[in-house]
Image (cartoon, rainbow, N blue to C red):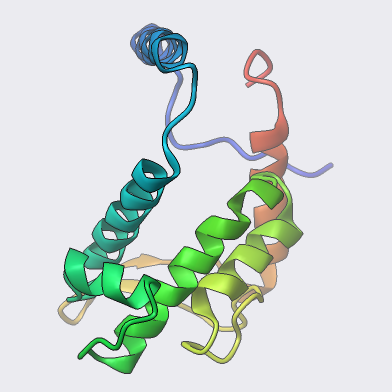
Length: 165
């Protein structure tokens, strides 16, 4: 009998109340805006999201540079950072076609995001990894041989209706 994935937190009444409040606010917003954003506003928001997300990963390109890349203009920057922008935009374009609980879709998203950046884009990792603080190992990830099973457990848990979690 295989173990079911259990996340390292408990869904509390406070969490459920926050989710309900967010849902209510989104519902009000959707009604007041009829759920439609102009294509220009959607594009600007996507560009801001891409720039901010990549900045977290130490991509140094500015909002203006990201915008220029997506408009096909030449930009002075590291080739890797420019490729990250292109990949992120392409992944956002595919987002409506992917299901969050489908392992193949997750790997397709990884492949799209990492295309031209790593050799094994779109594949589960095949080696060991850990998190280090200077020279100290602070977290050792599960062995690579366990990744497909663990990811299937996680994605299965995500696909389970909230009331069962």
